[in-house]
Amino acid sequence: MTTYSETTPNKDMLNNEIAGRAHELFLRRGCEPGHDLDDWLQAERELRVPARSASEDWREDLRKPSPHDASGYRSPKPIQVEPREA
Image (cartoon, rainbow, N blue to C red; front, side, top):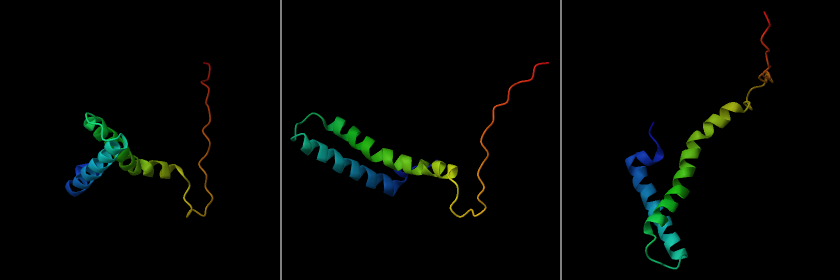
């Protein structure tokens, strides 16, 4: 499966966004050196998670009834079945 971050133009854009966010974190800390990797990883977590979850939203949409379905069909509720004694 190809993700947002694996395609070349998008990967470059994402890396630029991560670098920009990491720089913001650096500035917010008062330009204190020695946290560049922490800033980069934090920026990655912030920016990669939304891209990943957006691609998974379709699963939740499949569970919702379609607004275009005029039949009013609702899936039946599951029932519990007890095994019979022989």
